[in-house]
Image (tube, rainbow, N blue to C red; front, side, top):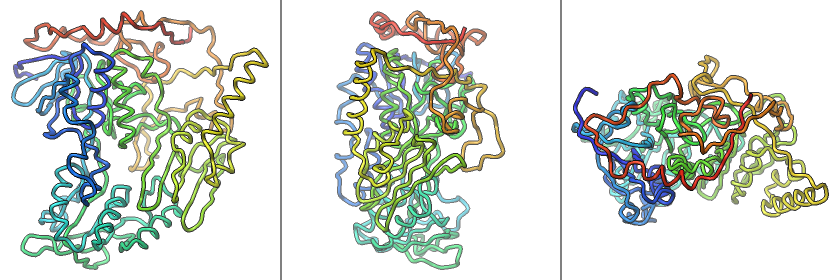
Length: 559
C-alpha cells in the first residue's frame, strides 16, 4: 500500500472474466451506454462455457464452440480488457493495486474471481508424476484431450457431479474407468441413499468399476509417468491417467487483502443485490456467498445458470437500476444430466425434522422425494429419464405456494407447470373481479444486519459454513407449518429511494430487504481518489444519466 501507483480509472471495474464477470459487463453496457467498463483478468483466453469442457475433451465440441459469447463481444461492447493480476483493494481510495506497481480506480468494483480446484494432497506419494491431472480450467482439458488417444485405463477420484460427468465422458470413448468414492454414496449433500444407489447402479451398468469407501493413498509410476493407484484397501489399480475431481474452493484472496474489512468465510458474503459489506464493492459467481432463505446459512452457488443470473443482477445494481436487481435469488437448485439420468434438486430435499413430511416414489430407473411442511414444498429431488420443469418447482418453493392439489402430480412426475400456473392466475383474476379487492401483500420483518447476524457455532459440521443466522421469525413460522404471512409493520413510513445518494449509504432501517449493514454515518468516508489520480473524462456519466430517468420507489421502515 506504500508503493506509488500510476492510476487509470473506470466507472465499473470487474475482476475476472468468467461467465459472471463478462455477463455483468455486457449487461452493464446495455443499462449504461456511456459508462466506462473495464475487465481485469489473468486469464489469457476469452470467456468459455465451462460445463461444456467435458464434451470438448472427448471431441464432441471444437475449441471455437466453447465460447460463451461470440468472438469480439468485448470490442463491440466497448469493454476494455486488461491482462493483469489484482493484488490488493484500496477501498478507502477506491482503486485496486495491480502487479508491476500500477493501479486502477473504480466507481463500482465487482469481484468475480471464481474458484480454484481442490487438488490431491501435496503429501501423496507419486502425486507429481506425469499423468496426474486436476480438471478445472481450459488448459487442464486441453492437456487431457491430447492424452486421451493413447489412454486405455483411467482412475477418477471424487464423488460429485463433476466426477460423475467425467466418468460418463470417458466411458463414451470406450476407456476403462476405476471410480474411487471416499464414502458409500455420491452427491451426499443432494442425494439420499436410494437415489445414490440408482446413480451408482446406472454407472456400473454403463461399464465403470465403482469403488466405494475407497481412497487413493499413493500413486505408482514408471519412469516418471503414472502406472497405477494404491488404495486404502492396499489394492493396486493399473492406469494411464489419474483425474482428480474433488470439488472447488472460492478464491477469496482479495477479501483478505482489502484495507476495509470485508466479511468472508466460504465465499465473500453478499446480499440479494450482490453487495459486499464494503461500500461500492460487489461479488458474483462462484466466489459470492448468498444466504439460503431456508437455513439462514451463507453459501456459494458455483453453477453456470446461477453465475449468469448473478451477473445480470449485479449489472443492474452497479448501474443504479435497483428495480431490476430487487428480485431475490430464492432457494438454491441444481439440474444436470448423468448419462441417461436427469437430476434435479431444489431447496433442501435432504433435511428432515419432526415437523416435516417426506414423500418418496421410485423404482430402479427413477426416484422422487418431496419434503413438505404443512402444505408447502420446501425440498424437491427428482432422478430419472425425464427432466421436470425446474424453474416452476423453484417458484413453488420460493413463493411458498400450496401444493395440496398437485402433491400427487409432483410425486408421480406428471406435473404440468403451464396448466397449473394458468389455473392459479385465472383464479386470482376471478377473485379480484368478484370481490373487488386487491390481493393482500404480506409484510416481511426487517432482517438483522449482516455485521450482527453471524454467530460462530460449534454445532455445525466442518462441511458447512460455521456461521449461522440468529432465529428468523419468518423461517421459524414456516417451519411450524404456518403460512408465510407475518405481522404487519406498525405505522410504516415511506421514504423515496431516488432521494438517497446511494443504496450503499443507507442505514440498517432503510434496507429491510437485504439484511446487510453498510457503511453510513460514523464510517470513514472514501477519499477523492487514489494517489496521483486526476479526474476521468468518463467519471460520473453513468450515474447522472441513470438518476435523471429513475422512477420513484419506496421502501418501508419501522417508525
